[in-house]
Length: 147
Image 1 (cartoon, rainbow, N blue to C red):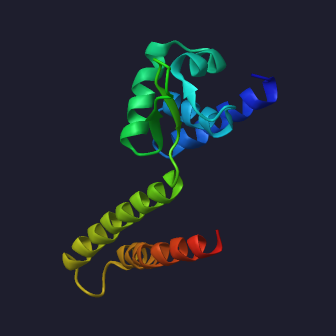
Image 2 (image 1 turned 90 degrees about the horizontal axis):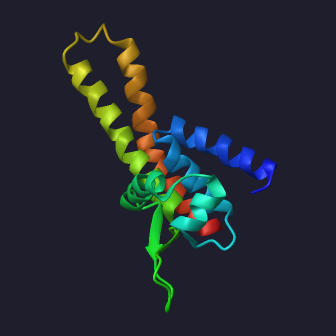
């Protein structure tokens, strides 16, 4: 892998790590976004990322479980291949939307424990997360119409 692409993979892995993925899973996901061919074996990924198959295995398992990556098998090949799953980003955003409801609900529970004149910070939190919880599904619908 050329140096600029390698730097991009590492930079993007840090971005994914900031969103909650382990660094290796972020590296694998970033690589799969730019790999040619888009379906990669663990050996091919290991060579590209300079890591062992053993280091890749937990990352691939996690990414597959999260629905971001899918496992494929080409006819006549023995090795599994992995690729970014179609619709992965939409699923990831929907998962985040579900998390938004957890923050909204936590704010509601906290507000219920306070007198009405208290809790301005919690009301702000509640308003923000309630807004995004309502708005995100509509944004995804609009995106699909435009895509």
